[in-house]
Amino acid sequence: MLDETYPEWSHEVRDITVIGDLVAVTAAITIKGITRCGVGVDSALDERGIKGAEHDALKRAAVKFGLARSLYTRRPVKRKTPSTSGSNQKNIRQSEAVTEKQLSAIYAIARAKSLDAQLESMALFRCEPEQLSRASASDLIDHLRNVRISA
Image (cartoon, rainbow, N blue to C red):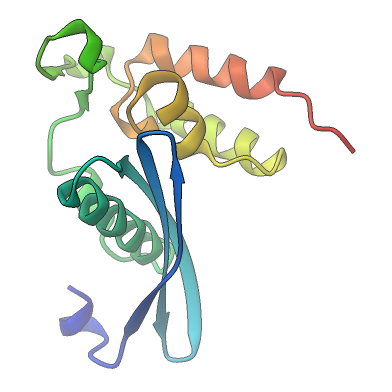
């Protein structure tokens, strides 16, 4: 998509942080001298997870340019269940999936408190905010509201 729209685009990985069994990758995309960053989180236990985190970071950076938004709407919303339960991923029925209003609240509250919404969601629910159920999204919103920031 970027190659077709802006063939002169470039990208770089700016940071890789391992947090327990998770890896957070910060990647930047530059188009015509303007740079936007995105953060992706996935499993640090294998190469697939690390590549997935970089992919998500690039996707998020592209969205900040108004590109690649369709990547978030084409696939069904899925909820990852913790590996300790031994169950596979389950599709959340559309009526139970996180709403756009909830996602907006999650990102706005996190931004206002200088928190990373993806990292908070991964730490609490082991999935990204876009993969939460409505109930889990409400719990994440409550969590973010209750985080105390020390000055």
